[in-house]
Amino acid sequence: MNPVRVAIALAALASLSVPLVFWGGLASWSWIVAAIAYQGFGGLRTVAYGVVWQDRAAGALILVGALAVIALVGRRTGPPHRSEDALTHI
Image 1 (tube, rainbow, N blue to C red):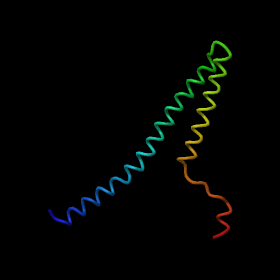
Image 2: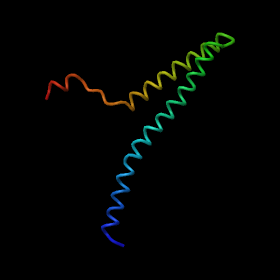
Image 3: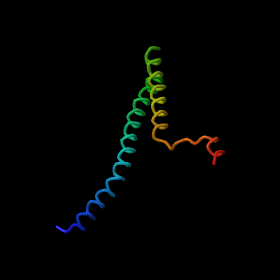
Image 4: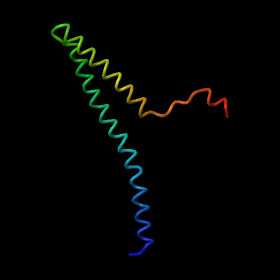
C-alpha cells in the first residue's frame, strides 16, 4: 500500500461526503415540508367539503397548523437574517 494513495483516497472520500451531508439535510427537510403540505391540503379539502361545521373547523385548524409549521421550517432552513444595525458597526 502506498501512503500517498491512501491519503488521496481519504481526501477524496472526505470531499465527497461534505456535499452529501449538506444536500441530504436539505432533501430531508423538503420531504418533511411535502408531508406537512399534503396534510394541509387535506385540511383545505375538509374545509371546503366538510359535512358538518365541526369538520370544517377541524380542517381549518389543520390548515393553519400546517402553514405555521411550514413557515417555521422555512425560517430554520433559510438564509440567516442580517440586522441593519450590524452594517453600521463596520
